[in-house]
Structure formats: C-alpha cells, structure tokens
Image (tube, rainbow, N blue to C red; front, side, top):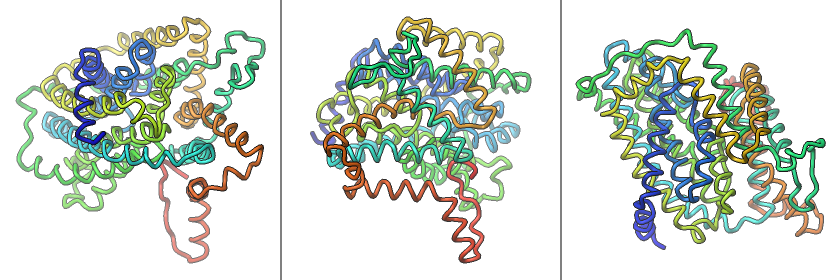
Length: 508
C-alpha cells in the first residue's frame, strides 16, 4: 500500500460516525483536561481508558491520541492566562506567556499558540506517516534479543532522562517492574506475590495505578496551591488578532520548534516537556530578539508550544512502528491495544492498516478541529478557569473512582487507586519521577517475554542477548547515556575543561 493509498484508506476509516466522534470527543476532552490545572493528559487518558475498552481498538486509540495532543493545546491556556501550566509541557510557556498577558496581549498570544500548535502537529503527522513505515520495515529484523535490548535498555534510558537524579528515576522504575510481576504467571500459571489475596491473582490493574499516581496525587498537590490561583483575565474575540509584527516574529521559532519537537518525540523520555525546554533555550541563543525573551517575547511562547505539539505527535512513531512506548501516555495506548489482542510493532501496518492509517488521518482531522476549538471558543475555556476548585476537584475524584472501579468491577481496584494515590503524592513531594513507574509496569511483561523467548531459543545461553549487531549497538547507546555524568567528570579532569551541566531531562 502506497502512502497515497494509505491516506485514502485512512479517510475511509476516520469518516465513519464512531471514529469521527472519537476524534472530536478526544480533541474536546483533551483541551478541557489541558485547561484545568492539575489533571494532565496521563490522568485524563487513564480515566477514559475503560471507555476505550468498550469501543473498537481503532476508535479507542483515536480518542486517546486526541486527548494527548488536545491537552498540549489546552495546557497553554492556563499557562498564559493565570501563570499555571495545565500540564508539564507548558511550563516554559508561563515565563513569557503570562508577562504578555500582563501587557494586554493575552488574546493575540493564544492565537499565535493555536496556529503554532496546528503547524507543529500537522507537520509532525506527515513525519509520522513517512518515518513509521520505514521504521516498521527495519523492526522486522528484530528478534527476542533485539526487542529485549530495546525494551530493557529503553526503560533504563527513560529512568535516566526523565528528570531529577538517577535514583529518582530508577527507584520508581524498579517498583513498576515489581508490580508487573504480581499475579498469575503467563507460562506456568502459578500465582506470584499474591500473599494469599485472591484479588491479586489477576495482577495490579494499570488504570487504577495510573489514575492514582497522576489523578489523586496531582489533585492533592493542586489542593496545596489552590489558594494561590490567579483569576483569569477576560479575553474577547476582538482581542484575538495578533499584529503583523507578532506574526512575523513567530514563524521562525515555530519552524525551529517543529523540528526540535519531532526529533525529541522519537526519543525515550518526556518528549513534549523536554522539547519545549530545548526550544526555549534555542530561541534564547539564536533569536534576533533574545534579549526580550524572559520579559514577554512572542518567540518564548511560539517555539516551545509548537515543539511540544510536534513531540506529542511524533512520539506515536516508536509505539506504532516498534510497539515500544517511550512515555506514560503511549504506554497506556499500548495497554489499550493489548487488551484488544493487538500488538503494535513492525507487523501493525500490514496486519492492521485500519489502526495505523486511521490514527494518522485522525490526527490531521483532530489538529484542524483543535484550531477551531481554541480560537473561537476561548471564552468558554476562560470560563472553565473561573469554576471554583471545591466544585471541579471533587468531581475529578469521583470520575477517577468510577474509572478505577469500572474496568474489572472490583472494589479492590479502588483500594489500589487510593493507596497508589497516597504513594504517588509522597513520591512527588520527595521529587521522584512517576513516569518510569508506569512504563515499568507496562514494559515489565514484555521484557520478561522477550527474555524467556531468547533463553528458550538459545537453550539457556545468555550470550544470545549480545550476539547481534543491533542488540550490541543498543546496549552501547544505553551504556553511554547511563554513564554520561561519569564521562563528563573524566573529560573535565583529563583536559581541564569545564563542560558544565548538560541536562538530560533534569538535574544530575
């Protein structure tokens, strides 16, 4: 199937009432989730995950993708209007976005952000369409040893670059892998680590864990700061038109942000967040107006917001082409597909073209819908920010409890949700990263599966995992990234050159 044939086929898939409604509902829900501070796309997707189980796999993934890039759009609204990022990828938008709001340019900035996000997302979709099939063809060369290196190595890299210290990523990752082993073992059928609880024989439910980590824990953190919320300014349609100068100063940062975002989306880690930081730093280095950035410059908003939307879209490439999630959101998408008996990877395009091409075309449609949602309906989103916290926070908790219970109709999952929420809150206060735990939970069974397959095919010979050139290359890259701090220290000592800190998603 050629690219043109694939797009035409994707149009047929998307323009059915169920899939079109899924794209529209996902984009709308994602924007709402992004606008409401403290929820974020991970918790939002986790709460609607039970709904996607009742839909077909194509409609379910289309809806989840819509929430993902929709939250990237919506998160900028709160960052610009009330100096509070709706999700982590909009942190950099607060710096210049809120200062421009104080200068009376809130409406114009929101328009620039919506247009930049549309450009970044649309160009990234084209990149996904080109890169994913090629990567899928390369992925056919992978066997158990290569997939083990990719899953285990990728998880280690993620723990390294997800932010904070190395321990802040490795410790939650280890917890996630351990939790993935709870329940009935796939090969022998024995129960593992159930400690006499029959409810644990089915394993830890991913939805309960994620909603607890990202829903309940985030709500607890929001409650701490709710008294510091800033009232949003009123923005009318007349205020939405940027000046010619603002348009002219935005197109170059948006172009650079698109390239940065697409590249970061192909790499392990919180791509949307890292790409927005990288774009902001680049603008401070190369922009003609770099001296204004940080004091209210349109470049400091256009670049990062375009980058995080491009990264959100391109992060679908590793999921669709290799079946490997590089962030918590694509990990949930992988879990949803596996519930339907579909394994993303090199054979997804030939075996399930309706999913691949349907998702691709739905992202074109979704980005277009979001452009119209974010500019004319800005008054609606601003009104949502005026809803008192004592109304929407309890409502979110109720929805989270319902979502946790509804997957298996088990009150035990609600207990897991509450317990994990408290644990997640404590970990966040101690500055641990939560994404490695979720991805460890999802990738744990895959790592075990590829390990078993490799040992079975080699009759127990461990060297099979470092025999192929692809596996060796992956492990070398993992070693380089994991020992980056040691390498830097050695170079500084040997050559006497102060290299400075190169952030891999956080502090060393």
